[in-house]
Length: 524
Image 1 (cartoon, helix red, strand yellow):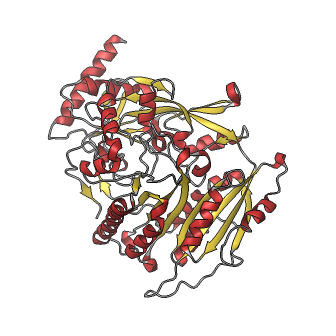
Image 2: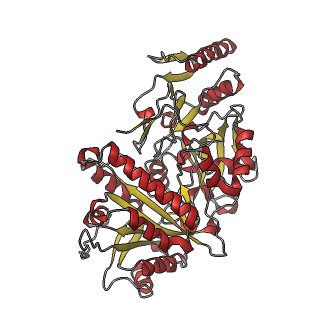
Image 3: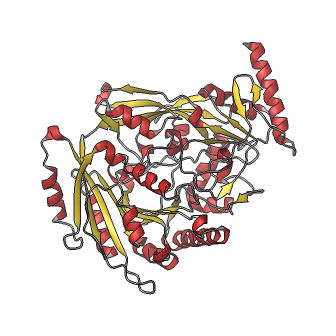
């Protein structure tokens, strides 16, 4: 065993020397003892956004957390090392966040998917211990067999658990149970400081636990998480209501999130054109008689849609139809344009998969995704809507614009996640997501993409300065932009970086602590 470890460390030293060399000559899989290091791949050099392309010099396909620990411990102990490491799962990295230029990408999907369930016990809490490379869809499918489900989830389930916890993990139920990072009981993390594998929780190594949650991959690599579960309903009553007035739309959304004992999910989106109406209706299995007049190119008419859901726990003898009717009587949607349908709980949570399949069949999935996501204070949401309409043309927009409320008191204050300053006692804030597709084959080539990115940067900068908005899944082109993003929380974030990753090995693609992104290849 000792001889094998010495050989591994010698080979890792050779790896570091090769990576630090200006000449990259890794052409085939390398034998570094137990580490499965491979040459770079196209997949490791790109991401879902298809905007930035950073080519690593090697890819690690770990077979266990020990492989990650071995790599990070050696890199952190070597004075020669300038090598950076990025953990890549199956997620929605948009601007190269999961890439490592000339470094090493850790393919988290190579970790065995392991899920262990614990039901009841102290406090009657049910939870699952899940490996960091497992996907949310796997956890959902297995937990439903036990009549359970994750207490908090994202709209898209085919992403790895470790990756979402490095951000926040939000969806339309966040107002009720908080983001996914507020529903984690324990983590196993490999730190970059010494390559140690640490089990942490709110009561054990709490500083690391809080740093990693929403930490953008800067402090450690999550290899296991203890996820809080709840009883799963068999069915869901899923409703949609349409509006032609933005103020009424947001007022009704805030009404719905004020009723957590009745309502389990609230989201909303802007209906810009027929394409956005159709695209958001693919998974909704009911015929909607909503065929509005979208006006003309010079004088467009914009509409809005709220969707909400009520869980049907049949053993509780709740008449969900009566609940929907009682709620709708308090709402101010357009005429008779409220539609509802009953679906299985699994189909409801997996609804975005149907939309993905539709986009794939139309050639709009593996294209550029210049997405922009923001948290916006309640006081600025109307101005944000006007800012969006000043910079987006409804007639040629491909994609979705989400707008829905969250509640601040469901978010912990010690994690690394950044929310807007409230400036008041108002607990409501909004998440806004511009989730657009830009297809080169339909005319959006390099210049078109750069113009979309410029407009999104203008929206983000203006919303930040005027409205106090903060980016979610943030991208800032310079460290100075990150300083402004964190604001008064920057000092704590930087102190955590010094403590847990003093050599700045992890998360180079975020550009938070880098001097600049050099040799970056942009999409064309």
